[in-house]
Image (tube, rainbow, N blue to C red; front, side, top):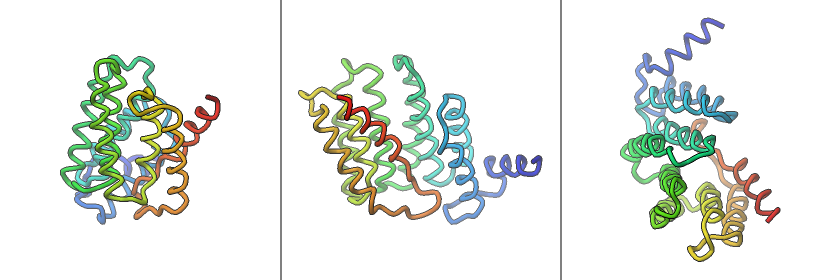
Length: 211
C-alpha cells in the first residue's frame, strides 16, 4: 500500500520527467487520475483532481483534464454567483492545452463549457456570451465531425437557453439525438483520450422526457 501511494505521488509530481503523450510515466499518471475522475461526484474530489492534473502538466491532456475537473467542480456548487475564480482557473488551463494543440476538437468543447459556465454565473448580464460558446462548439464539430461530445454540451446549453435565443427543449433534443447517434460509432484514440459524455446525456434525456 505504501509503495503504491509513493508511486502515485512520484507520477503526479512529474519526477519521472513527464514530457509527452508517448512518455510512459505521463500516460500512467493521467490514467491514474482518470480512474478517480470517472467516479468523481463531490467538490473535494474535483478540487484534488484539478490540482493533480495541473501538477502533471506538460501535455495538452493534463491541462485539458485540469480544466475539465474545475468545470466539474462548478457543477457541485448550488450558488454560481461566486464561481468566477474557478472559471478563471479552468480558462487558463484550457488555454494552455490549446497552446499545445491548437486544432483539437476536444479542447474546443471544453472552451465552450468555460464560456457557458460564465453565462450561468449571471445569465441576464452575460447572455450575449452564448455566441462565443456556440462558436467553439462549431469549431469542434468542424475539426472532428464524428465526435459526439460537442452535441451533448450543445444539448445542455440549449436546455438552459430560452427559445427566443435559439434554445428550448426541441433544440436540446435534436442535439442529444445527434450525440447518441455519433456515440455508437466513435472510437477513442488512446487510453487517455476523452471519453466522457454518455452519463451526462442520459441525465439530460431523463430531464427532457419529463418536460
